[in-house]
Image (cartoon, helix red, strand yellow):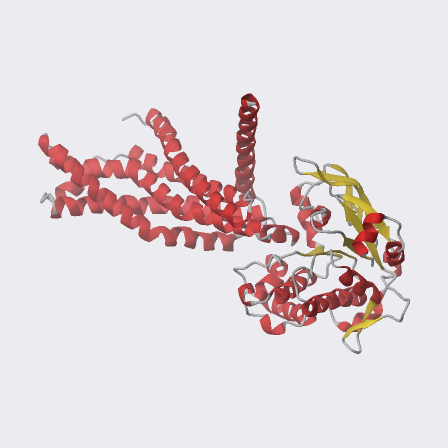
Length: 259
Length: 279
């Protein structure tokens, strides 16, 4: 009995992974075959990019501030408060900027994609779209995925910039250190490999959060309750996967660009 | 979509000789459980309106979704417009589906779009000029008597109005086949009659082949016993004893087709289930 339950669960997991892989692959291929819905791409870029800007700015600014506060306390023990800028800058650009932005955007947009598409599934709007001769994958999913990738890249740059600014504000106003020294330290120790590392990650995170949000939305069953389940699953899965994939990408990039 | 083509109540001679618009042979469906539909075979000829009867939960809506390729049969073959769609890839199904119109049970209007954008959805996707979309949407809305809803959102429409907008959306592209999934389900008798009148109008004015799913016998009999009168711009009863020869019946019982015939055959069948359903 227990063996058959494990067997059934394992098969369901493998099937779900297979379905997701095919779904995500088809959504990517659609960008290279007409028709491509550019208007939807722009509309989604506005929803995902401009809509997420306030939360990304605020989370980036305060994360940079917290980093400066915490590091200043520790670094002062070694008389190394002068490297606060380097610490905040590198941490934001290489790690926290992409990951935090990914998780914030996943919370906001993977959930909205899952609930919006899920509601369309349970009210037969997706079937109606297919019946009208329009491919919902092409019309709804592909624009969301590519807008998320493009916008997450830009939002990460914004988060990095505001994180460094937050760190500067704390360094100058609370730790009473020299602001120019902070910014010089942050800039001088920055290498191209750090920037590449920080800008490669959002490409993967944007793809992950949007494809997972759309995938859960499109396979919603069970009415409005099912929409709720899809939304939760989309946020949880995309957030956990962002952190897990971050580990893998960091490991690979550190191999390519050793410190 | 103008009423002037009332004389086209019978399909053109060429179409009469053409093959069926829809043909199912030994079609079965299941969803990882007992079969929902089993060994279904029937066809819809050009100009024919088929009424699919049966109580709730026998697989009527599933059958409709199969015909337009929204679901796949487990076994059997299914031809739509002469093409076997049972194994056709999804991307090749879209152009075929665009040739048909479907009215969903709960209307399935896009709630974030206005009535204009809902009805003109296919035209918008085909990048038809805005002016032409507006005029064709107005024409389609006038056919269902809802011109005033042009700029409204579905949320501000009643159930019956939504159903009529869904009919306008299905008809705007001059479909070669219309599938109605319980178009009067959950509506009051007056609104139901309005919807049936639209279906009769489409049948008699444009002779579009159709498959109508319903569990309401009165709708089925009204379709059979009435015709659309262009002069009165309304539905009128046929003379006593006359029925529409192009309107025939199918009946499902627990996923199996138990009747395929005319009104006369429906009324005089010896099948116990059909008799109980009729009573």
